[in-house]
Length: 145
Image (cartoon, rainbow, N blue to C red):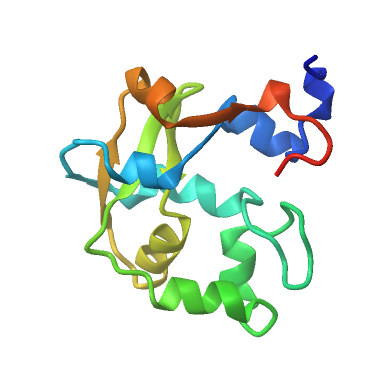
């Protein structure tokens, strides 16, 4: 039995801007997609989406911009941002009228922090959704992670 869409645990903003499925990052990384350069400006809206968890919590309640603006409160994410290797691209997919990140929030935050005007991306075609999907959010049940 599946649960209703209201059981989706993600914040409303993520439900409205994000994907209808959860994916396996490693499967995304393995896809044979070429890298290209794109203006970072197209992706900066992601810095205002609560995709991370604040220290000592287990919830989507921290935006990358908040972490950058309050580094003393979020040492875990700040360390991940600082150690991000920008030789790896961010992975994006066309979704709800714009390019949406599948992977690379820490790298995007690092490139922004360093003042980059462009960023390396991989545009993942939607036809790969069946290959990378872990679960559909509409099928989420309490206790699933």
